[in-house]
Image (cartoon, rainbow, N blue to C red):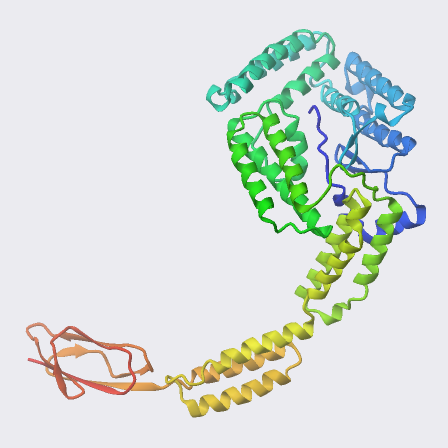
Length: 509
């Protein structure tokens, strides 16, 4: 597809090689030059032209790789693929400056469209093996099939009510240009160019919240109405990410003006009809937030050089290694590691020297220090368990003589426990014992005559006990006497909130 390359955050590089990557940099004084992800290549901030050329040649080699056996392809397809590869290779190797090969982005360098367009064309040409193309006349058939496919896609995808007038006009223009591209495709290379361009046009789906998708999405010329709100939400996530960066740098982001700026951003985006309008709102909000927290975007800032990054990496790593895993629970140590990894990501991705200053280091140190040790967590857990035991004290439902003994014994053993497991063992044992101290009362049930009643039973303090009363056929309930007193006749008598023993006598007649 055209413009396959979405800018990926450089931090993903360090997820797979955290300390190793920096150790290598410290030895060579050089950052990694390129990182592959499928057909995507991100070029790091290092501007070594020969290495960038090699990275782009690797992409080309990947594209031409399927053409290993000449006999698998119609001769024209084979020759066009080889010519396409050689022309782009010559362009890359002949480049004398970076601007001919890469585009600058806020996150580093990204290869420009040309190499990736050639890569994609090679990929599509590789699909035209002899099962697809056996003679020159097959080009006419392919063009006809592509045109029919586009007509079908237009009918299915381009529903008028889903677009505003601005985007609908673009769709109609694209349709005309698509047919012109297909009609003018007199070579297989031109055919795959047309295929690539218009397949991309029909691949729009509501975007998800992946920052990498933002950049590819902004390249889209046509958006559904609902996709505009998706775009606004994605850019709002980027605003929040920027605020998190400011917090890492030591700025105060908890200001009323910041919240107001975000609210204004949302309301303005709701009224925007075009993607470029949303982007303008995003940019202006970015500036407003920076001014609110005290960041001078116009000030010239020193870049975060490799040596600066390495120094901070070593400083944070040395701090991390002062923490002993044996002093923490598994959960606690995971937090320690997460803080360290997040710090390393930040060091790898920040652009400016002041973003990895002493304020950043202080924040990392405070986060690490705030993680509770095994001893601290165990102490808190003990306190919670003891509080549960003590909750039985003073409860009238329980035998307080036994409760006081169990609470005292359980508290002593919990305080003496050295592990969470030992605390759990004591806790379960004494909670079970305390539950058994609950008072129970006997409900004595008797009857006279022909009928059935619930059997005599016991009930816990404060619970209810229902006696069901059913006379035999031809009989009726003559009387119900509870604790020596007659009560209203009923088929079910309930003792509520029992706090003492009771008797009930039922007479049938």
